[in-house]
Image (cartoon, rainbow, N blue to C red; front, side):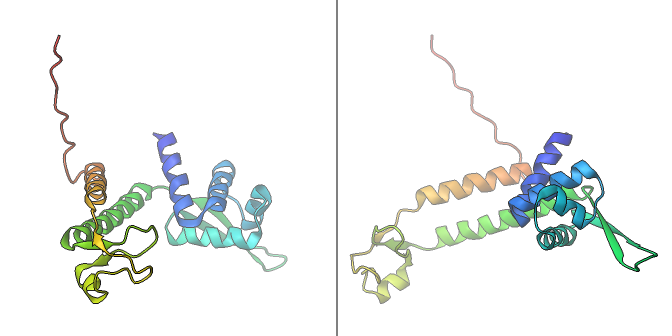
Length: 182
């Protein structure tokens, strides 16, 4: 379980702050608690970048700090550590947001008829937009044809179903048994 949690934490760090964030996470796991300067030294990442990453973690409730004051200099030192108790909650919220986005995309794909010239990178137009351009591509002037989005719709539905199963919003579909002929 700890391995899975670690993998999820590293993936989340990568998503929210990039490759350098993964290095900071690894260093924090190794050290337990460290200052931003110590983490910069361990990772080879600039101190300002490490601070920025730590603040992103803090904003996402993945890290906390303890502040102490040096009695001689009067300077404050911040000792950072990972806070993973809320990781499952954070991951669930992220997946819910992805699910809502995918449902919105599916709604857009199924509620409109799209037209396209067939040239990669050229816009996919709704019926009304295609009418405005007299069914000619606004970039190349080629004739617009109805766009077949069945693969996109199928992929969106598949991903939505996977997320709903992961989140416990839907039961896992049963696989049909096929009888082997001998």
